[in-house]
Image 1 (cartoon, rainbow, N blue to C red):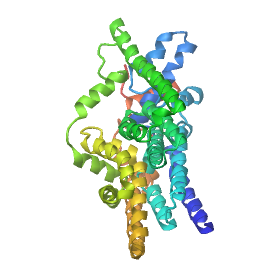
Image 2: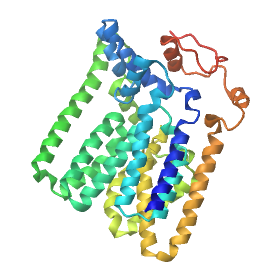
Image 3: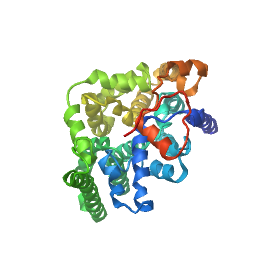
Length: 405
């Protein structure tokens, strides 16, 4: 156990290094800046005594909750490239420790724990965690909801169901991708007869009322702004944004989702996760886990547009891969060293992909070469708006500034 703690501590140090190395010189992108900018503008309602600014998160973007923390930090402290990403980074760290908690609680083989966490740490997911767009929040809530839903199915413990319901609600507020875990939750409620517990019933009623009010407001404010003439269309405003995305994103595009999954991890990691979900069909002991993960796999594989959302489920898919791999090692002890070698290959592949595909982020190649690859119009409009509002120069002064109306 002592050796395991030392190994996990060393991996965590590497995890922190990859999260923060050169973070202060990593420029913002539109996916980070847009929601933060809208929250920043929202606070102007109080300083300018104009309540119309409260509509900004609802009128001009799609998820007010997504970056409310970073947007508030932006309003108070300006565009600090480390501070504004801290909410996302803290959720990334929470996911790391949650994985450790789950693996130890499920009595996973120490070799599998160390190598799986190392492969996760050395993957392109770390790049997603370094951003301020709130993706790490979704990943944490999906993993927590998925695990405790599975535990409630296995053991029927009321506390596990309560945690799953709460984290699912927070996940839905962060990003609607979390909705796909609802079938597993509903099955657990029915299978384990949780409706007989008053605390569960009261919690469900309160959460339904809260979520209904939240989404009603998310639709009402854009609609009122549209009727009042503040905006001329609804398709990319508030909850209507998601309606248009779902309508345009339906269709079969399995390859695109897997390409994005490989882009953030590696081909070997993708094969490992796919092999695990297929193998779990033949393992009676793990079929309850399939009830939680299969809806997520169906969603991400059938999503036509924005299929990079598959990365939101990476930690959940990793959990399933680790559980299946550990089962195989226990069932067939002679496969131990083969499994260790395979996990080492996966870890190396993830690390190689990270340090080659994302070398610009870490600046492992000379900075001059990085600048040459950039376009002169290298900043998104929302990033420019943030710098103008807070009178802050960009990192790359050679960027041209298009006029923002």
